[in-house]
Image 1 (tube, rainbow, N blue to C red):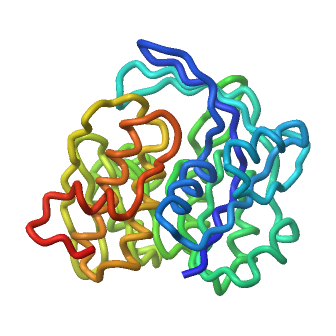
Image 2: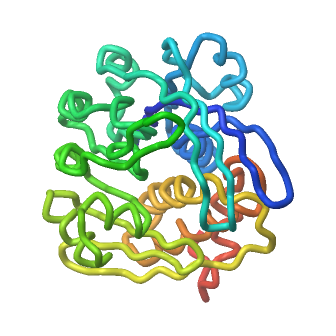
Length: 290
């Protein structure tokens, strides 16, 4: 499996009850760094303003191919508790085109798209990537900037893009919002009907559920030793799931491995940085397969 993670970087100011700190953010960062920690063959193609290139290289420890644009995304995230946050949009970045990435993804089999807003990776990019396995894990395709808020709308446009996906990962609120359904299971099955092979719906500390056309899997959440920062938890889950598909054929095991990666992510500030061995050692399986 040869992966590329594509999306804008974001300069995040994260405000919690106990601290305020600034980090490099966005799915391309949290997913890309987690995949690299898990020894996956991964290219990180991140869009940003020229002034942020050096900081991004430092944050990614050099594991980045900058796509230089006019603007970087800038966000402020204020957590009211560990599962809820208020999201302020200060800049929504620019559009990534197929021309920007064509040469770098030529040998890639799987493309992870991590937009923060629809225009970051519009439908035209999905269409141009025909022949690649496309994966997505966030709300970007139905998010638009309005003043200092990120507004969720244009759900039919997002669903049109989703028809090109192999896997989709969303939390319970996101899947119900974009599918315009009040029930999580109905929303997930509606997503499968678009042609998506695997749909995963997460619900924070309440665990997650994996949906395929043949079967559904209920995945527990694992308690953290200490919660320091929940930013990137969903992105880390997806990275863990992708890694797990190279290790296991049972999606239950894939989901549990992913859930543990997510747990280990929130025990520190910044992206997941553990190893495959460390993840499996913490799983409550009778037999350790690795």
